Length: 260
Image (cartoon, rainbow, N blue to C red; front, side):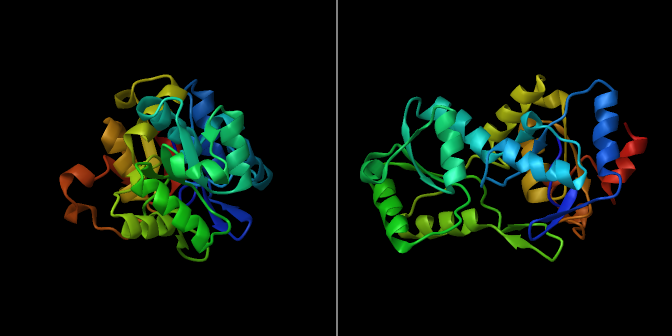
């Protein structure tokens, strides 16, 4: 399982810049007969809509191979609030995808009675929405977020997480502790394990962020490889607690070709 931004590509606006060797790594994994998945914390669109521009940029990836917090959120909901309704703070594309997947996304007039408030990636956000979400949370809804890390790697510097900023505002207003359902989370582990058809301890998680990708793999007991082209490129691994260290590190994803 591989991360996308900072590992396979860097994003500059709507343009994806491929890391050297990224397409070849995916093709070599497939040629070996092993399944693969790409897990991004981007939750603005359906998996296929995320895969399409990556293919246009030259990264050979199918929509089924892409996982996002919109996928792992459904696993959390099925386990903890089966059949429950959710107030979504996110895009219309995210709403449409969740509704197609069978999630009960609450209409505005029903949000006060939602079982969960899920912060995905909002394209626009106003105080009225925040206040409705805060009231739902104080009435008993769980506060969920796809990501609670501050940023992810972009071609022009860190891309700050709108989801984390929004969830932090709601946490401050309500005193609730956000539950992460993307990377890193137990729901994320269960989602990539199911998609790859193997227990997490038989899988490898590859990414650029020790607090997101490596932490996800560590939760599930997967092997982990840090790629130093993104958020944690300059981290001194020997200064990290052992529980946070990757099993291995490479300077760029192309180095994996010799390992496959």
